[in-house]
Length: 257
Ligand SMILES: Nc1ncnc2c1ncn2[C@@H]1O[C@H](COP(=O)(O)OP(=O)(O)OP(=O)(O)O)[C@@H](O)[C@H]1O
Ligand SMILES: [Mg+2]
Image: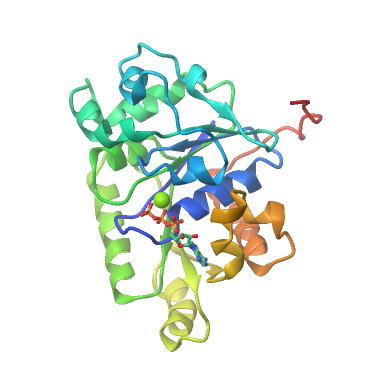
């Protein structure tokens, strides 16, 4: 089983959008669990899953409840969600009070090691203990960057945060919400992948097709498969997949729901 953390210190850069679309792409032939670690529950919402965790996330961390009982299936084959609810607001505190506080996420996903090929962690922004947990558990850290001087700072912050943690996972950054009408964005697309080793040359455009995810409550590939956005996430998944060396069996036959 491989683990991806979709993470940035910066908010609103497209982490959740990437987490949901990568999860959907990966689920074409892998068994995927998307863990929503953000109390806002945006990934949970976008995949149309009820934001309810029985006993709260504290019961999962404390071991009173098994993770398998909290997992929900989605409308998509092989794609499940571990939803977030308001109890995730206290997750930093819950981890802080636990033993080996930075390894709790890794410990919890060990419970489902045989059930999934890939776990994607949708992280809240900021340099929290939740983020440290996600980074520690991850085989790769996927970082969306909106072209601006500030986003470069956040890439530096993420790189520093990872290097200060016990994680040795590579950082895979990509440009997100790119508007090629803007000079600054075009310059970033041309220069960043050349200048920064961790920035790959897959570009996610700024587009209404992605904005629509909130009203469709679905991954872009499911309702607008022929768009540049859907193709860009498919390309992003192929690159990330190569980094984490995920291999899967042939897709299982269609499951009835
Ligand atoms: N490429 C894009 N084009 C247009 N809109 C986008 C794109 N990517 C994301 N958005 C929109 O931008 C907003 C922020 O995206 P998203 O929630 O994925 O960011 P985030 O980094 O997860 O935010 P947070 O830090 O709050 O968790 C959302 O309304 C989303 O629909
Ligand atoms: Mg988010």
